[in-house]
Length: 37
Image 1 (cartoon, rainbow, N blue to C red):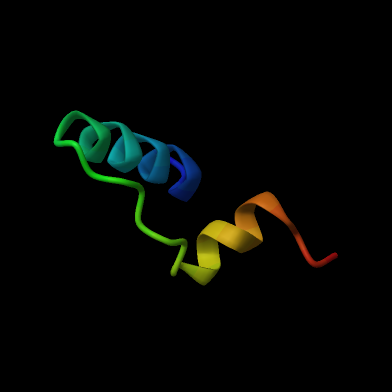
Image 2: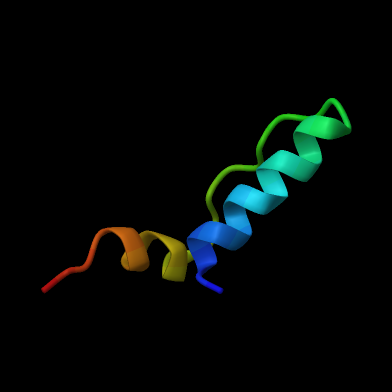
């Protein structure tokens, strides 16, 4: 699994608990979706 899909699953689980998404604090997640090359 990718960091992004893990993040989306966490958002879904938190939403079911009535919570908002956590801020993105994982540099790898940002690199995966915005490569620096």
